[in-house]
Image 1 (tube, one colour):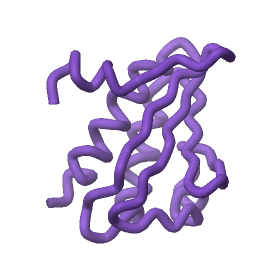
Image 2: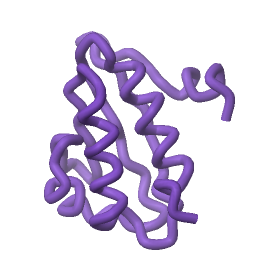
Image 3: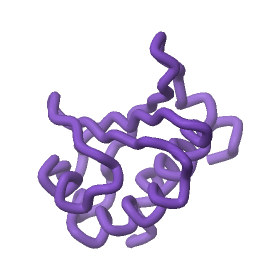
Length: 104
């Protein structure tokens, strides 16, 4: 996906946060290894990242929290971020999810 296409998936909310939807497409869902990759990348940005599934929201910097979302293949999650690198965080994290956590 081009940078322009990835950027078009990101919206800005009235509170200034940015958000986008991402669908889990890897065969094992958001399991421990995928969650660890997500957290490792999230920690590289100056942004507070939150992930929501079925009304439950957790920190994007918590492996256990992400696993508790029970996001199986086909699940659409919402990524939301605030901070100086919020947009960059969602671009990178969205790409990681879109690329099946580099597992397949």
